[in-house]
Length: 391
Length: 217
Image 1 (spheres, rainbow over the protein chains, first blue to last red):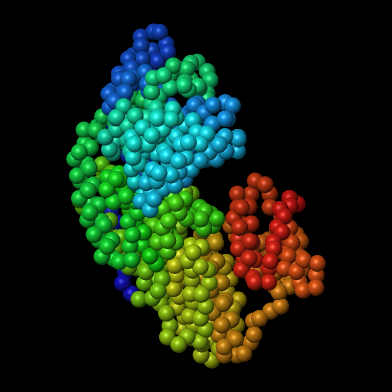
Image 2 (cartoon, chains in turn cyan, brown):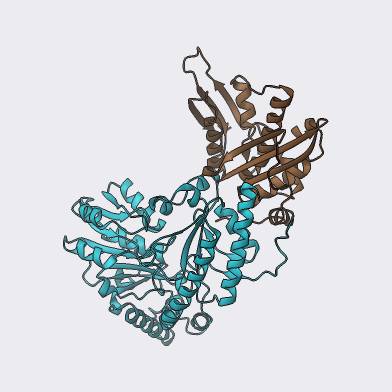
């Protein structure tokens, strides 16, 4: 029997939708702020003012990158907190009107929506098509219900499909409904201008675009009726109390500007690599690529192979030094039995859904790594298939 | 996802599994699990002079499922059928140097597959029927297939099942299984164990309804 592991192991990280390595330049800036300009931005002495200046500069840089005013950004701990603030902070207290979202949202929105339902808010879920895009006709019908906020992700974390947010925002605004978008998976990967999108609220998390973990933001368009969900010293215009994470925020701003510098070049590199990967997968046969063929995040792939156990393929790649993720993490038997809620909504047949991995390329990948990944993937799929139905 | 750390032995058997394939004209064969649930294992046997002369398996499962299939077929090869029947999940896992608790379920399947293949051999070649009346003793044996991931012992031997009643024909509610299982509220595997109990019992056609109560004593 052929040996599985005669080749040298190369460490390859291809799970950039889960998190990213911090750019070394960003890490240096963060370190500097943690050890030298460490003051509390609210302090009136020189140490506080150093921090305040760095914070203001970061706010300005971020606002330029996103196409908004500096005062429209609320810094917080990340995507989950930003989503929670957007939902809890804007829904009417009398629960007369509620939320319109989708079934393919990240848990930060989906679980919040479930909680709101339990609290007595009306919550509606717009259906998606086989590519994972919201069905606009159904969406429009749902807008006539008791809805005060729409929350739809800009790009899906599992399959990478991008939603027509600008169009949906326009439709919602015609009915006076607020629009939030969780853009965690899109920021730094595709150009985003909040004014062009026309949204009222938009969430982002630094660690998805090569910044530090534990820092993110919510864009709140000027004039949007919103109230805080945490109370304290009145930071962030009273919307998010708590001493500002200045190193994190400055690191986030720097990371975003580096992403923007490299965006065009990276998009081209990812296109070339994903084409190569998809071609290899097609040749393996009994294969599906999930998500929209064009309206998608560059570099993110959801690959399904029939007769392959996705978890087993992930493990095989991991033992070969390659980090990708499965659609459904097999923590418990119960979790494994239920295939990913996203793939379910897309209507992917079970034999394919069970054999799904997500590959998310990133800035730190190169040609050699992609080649290595393809060779290990091909061998893994062949191996696991032969183990499944005999050689 | 939980950090899953495998022993070198598990990795070796996953990367280079033994006895993979399908045997032609097997004396006994069985498929357990279902790909819809995540994994499936098939086991094939050749028996000569009451000994397992050859054995192979196919797997649609994760690394621990494949590794357990590899090791359990290694262990069974050459053994008298009677001894192979006594091979347990623990024998396989010990031989692998242990498995992470979250992977317990995936590994039990290979051992179940071996037992089912031996039963198939016995019914085809020795005329031993394995059809049993569904009663409490039958259900107890089924529940022995449910392993508590934290304890590494099946729920019957771990004395977690405190009460079991099955209502047969002529009873008030035929097909009802009542079961009381002792699991602490803080037990991280509480949910897994209950899921597994339901899965095993639901697979029995005579079982119509399951009333599982968690008790804390």
